[in-house]
Image 1: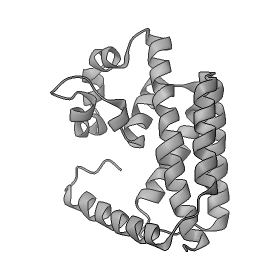
Image 2 (image 1 turned 180 degrees about the vertical axis):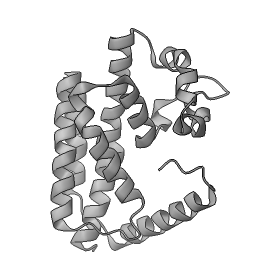
Image 3 (image 1 turned 90 degrees about the vertical axis):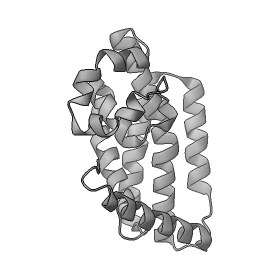
Image 4 (image 1 turned 180 degrees about the horizontal axis):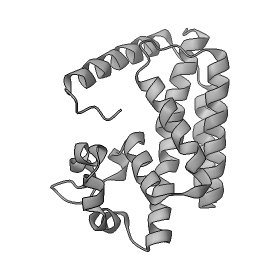
Length: 187
């Protein structure tokens, strides 16, 4: 069985990559539709030059503007979603976005896969606040149910030592991969 600190790390990582990311996709899509009365692809194309003026936009051009056609929001990571939601300015969740990005960065570049109980409680509260305000903005009962189920499943899961070892190796590999990117690192 994993230690409590290892479980904390994995659960936070899962909360960010599943319910938080799902919520970010829906918030971005709604904001683009409501504020700009456009679909995401049209919004991106209309703002292409502004997006590509940033280091982040240039480094993710192939994901925002794939050569083979339409972008796929399910392939976007939290950093990409953060930049586009910030670009669109969603007041009700703006306060939470930076903390979600900072948390993601701390978990993605930890050096180890341990999160203390006090840090876990702090991060978990930040995630809960983000989810609450995001769902209040969206007013989507179906999404609220899906996200609540995701959060509940993650909070209740038992984590094996093998899962921790697998994640530790993945984190080390990703860290080495980022170092090889030679200045193309967005994080």
